[in-house]
Length: 143
Image 1 (spheres, rainbow, N blue to C red):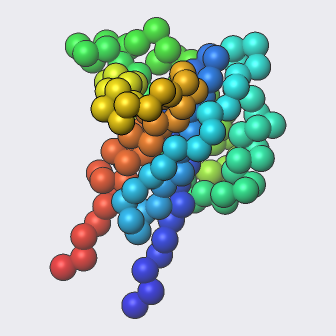
Image 2 (cartoon, rainbow, N blue to C red):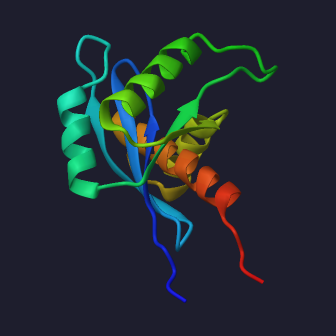
């Protein structure tokens, strides 16, 4: 029996930088890629298109911000719009993942590693955490 390996791209959308990560369902792991600089606080569609052509993902994962009390975060509407546009433009299924505390966790990981990380690197680490969260939650373990 052949195991299907799906590639997914994760996004931590922002109005200045959008963090990017690549993940694989077989290994249930992701790694950060270079963040994409926004254009006038809007998605950089040409850069996203190049990314998707290069990696050919089967699914796109987008972190959905919300507050700690499950209210909408100020970025929620922008992320929902980005997700709809992403799926509409590229015809690749998009799934949303709760991204609560991923940026904080990304900063903590950078501190623990004692390596200086730029804001865009932190955003891509957050995208990696979002992607790995989705990979773990969607993993089917055969019996």
